[in-house]
Amino acid sequence: QVQLIESGGGSVQAGGSLRLSCAASGRTFSSRHMGWFRQAPGKEREFVAAIRWSAGVTYYADSVKGRFTISRDNAKNTVYLQMNSLKPEDTAVYYCAADRSRPYSANIRVGEVYDYWGQGTQVTVSS
Image (cartoon, rainbow, N blue to C red; front, side, top):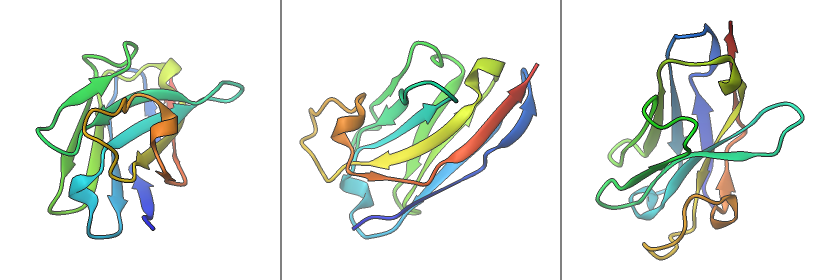
């Protein structure tokens, strides 16, 4: 079982920055793909960014590419989401997710790949 705890959310004005963190329990963090998803009120959950367990290969939604950066520190069992140039449309609850050590080639842009989810952290961007 893996527990994920997100932190770093908050309220910021448009153009500002926030850094989300997701701390994972357990000793197999380094072999798990990790992802960030978000859900705005009245909308479905959507993919934001993901990082493979090895080689630091990353993926981003088109809407955040060039503004958000996902990274991981395996020594700290933590994945980060640096969010710059925030826009009001980035307002949502952000969720961290971890897989159950699926194959390296798994499509980690979809929520179905992930087996563990955090409770979420609210990000609010005002104009």
